[in-house]
Image (cartoon, rainbow over the protein chains, first blue to last red):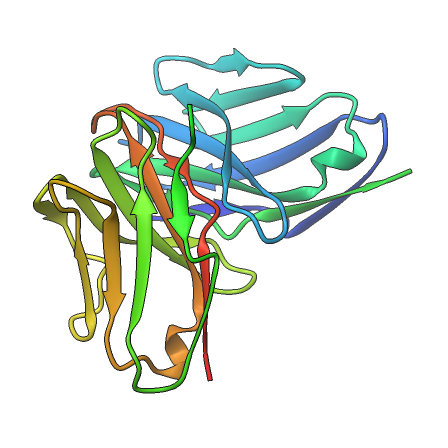
Length: 110
Length: 114
């Protein structure tokens, strides 16, 4: 079936390095994606979104890239900090509801 | 501007009891969504409501689960005769409109069924 999924379950990076979290989707009609950050015991926190008419969008220390040809998007975090440690989900809005992948756990080491 | 509020944050119930979870959307938001999350998994859509209307309940179990969003007051997710498999984190999200709007989440209610 159609899905929004992630390539890697865990990503470990050193503090100060850049992090790249990947996400693949299978529905070519998907047109709106959101990245969420979820810390332990908390609700998902909106990070950044992107629509299908864009290839790239930047926020504060974060960049989302969308490649519609291969149905892939990524979240780049610059100068990763310990506070970035969390599970990151990409989600697609489809039929008025969010479809989540299983998440990537980002671990930041000093 | 307060965010999405949920209460209680933690709820313990014995099998067969009822669980009531409450959600107050962000100010100005009239669309509410409920999601369930099992440990180490992503969130799964349950139901989408507007004031006094259920728009999409395709993710709700057919029995024991119900949701409402009255004209006044918070949205309520009700689980009757809880079973151990209902233990999960339940998150509420809200958005100001439907099409093309991000959803913002509350802190969740963690339900534990003994």
